[in-house]
Image (spheres, rainbow, N blue to C red):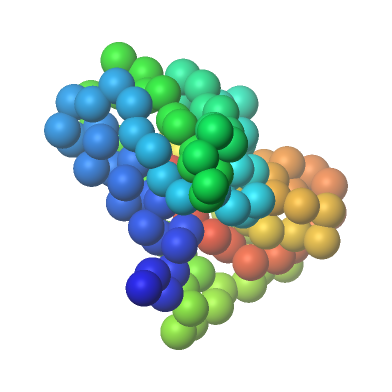
Length: 127
């Protein structure tokens, strides 16, 4: 049983990067697919796709070769949700990282949420 699937997905990515793997698989959900899509747009991972060939779909993530160290930190947890208004969103690591925020307009980076003027739940920070 997994109580926090987003933290599990981030841990799978973190472990695959540290182990030097080129690909990883994780159980599929819309939230994980959106997170993988944002990571792909931000050039943190090479690509992601959904494999629906089996009974339960999986997300297959291809990692970049030139990412020697990647820090993925879960901010909002099931026991303590963290919400921020658009005016409270700050750059991650002086602009060298990104935050992923769940807003009413869908998942987006902290910069995009601030420019759209929407706040939401801060899921994770990546730098």
